[in-house]
Each structure stands twice: as structure tokens, then as C-alpha cells.
Length: 207
Image (cartoon, rainbow, N blue to C red; front, side, top):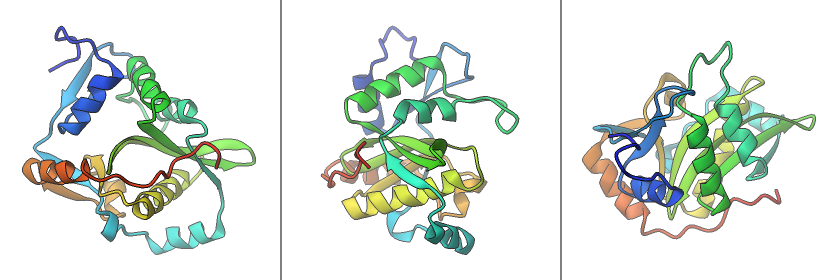
């Protein structure tokens, strides 16, 4: 199913889709169409079993980055959409960027930023609905910046009382953090429960 099926794609529709287990992706960065995904298997990171590799834990203790939240959402999503030597293609097109910026403006999309010497060097963004956080994408301009951002995100979500961290898919990068793949039925049950949770506020641009 595509977003062109006589349905106007709005940020409100995006919220309803996430709450029902769907998420959107474009085929390429310059594609105009957006496709809905509803996978049989779903990746999640259990917040109570998040694994930090020893080398990364050591790096985090050194605090190599200044970390903020919601300070540069637009810059983060655009960085995640960049094409370069390390990323030949992306599913984030201009329409997705615009829609998620609207989600951010309405309090449903959030970013974690890593800064070094005043420059944005890494981060991630995702969508939050009640006690569920749907991780979308991350980027690094220096080694380990996105990994440190993920560690910070999980600490925020755990402290605030979130119940679900959805990674959508499982990949080799996420396996180091304890990502697991679960069937759709189990995922939907976890999502339903997470949507009954009201976590504490943990994202603020004043960080």
C-alpha cells in the first residue's frame, strides 16, 4: 500500500499508523511515493535488557560529546537523509522530512544530538506515542556518535517509564545492543500495552 491511494498523508495519519503497527518508508531519497510497512517480524530493544558493549561504556564515561535533545530536530533528520560514501541510498525523502518535522512541532517526534566543538556530529530521531518510542534513523559524522546517542536515548526512556523501544528491523549494528526479533502478534500486544502508559516528560530543547 502506498500513500498515493487516495489518502492525504498527514502527521495525524502517521500517528494513527504507528499506533496500529504500521510505519512509512520511501523507496529512495528522490522517490515521491511513500510505502506502508507492516512486517511479520519486528525488531525491538528490551529496555530492561539493553546491552552496552564494554568499549562503548568506557567511552561514554569519558563524555566525549555534549548531548542534547530536541535542540536540532530538523538538522538531525536531514543528516540521517544524507547520501555519501558510507550511505549510497536512504528511505528518507523530502516528504518524510516535512511530515516528521510537523510531528516534532506537535510534540510527537524527538531527536537526540551529539555535539563536539559546537558542531553536530551525530544523533538519532524517532516518534513517541505514550509509552512507545519508535526509533527511525541515526547518523554519525565522527566515530561512535550515533552509538552514544542511542545509549543516552535508552537511559532517558528507561528513567521516564517508557515500555517499548521499537527498532522496526534487526540489523548487525543493533545486535550489539541486545535487539530481538518478535512476531507481529507479540509486537502488537506489547504496543497495545505501551499505549496505555503515560511516561514522564524526558525530551526538552533546553538541555
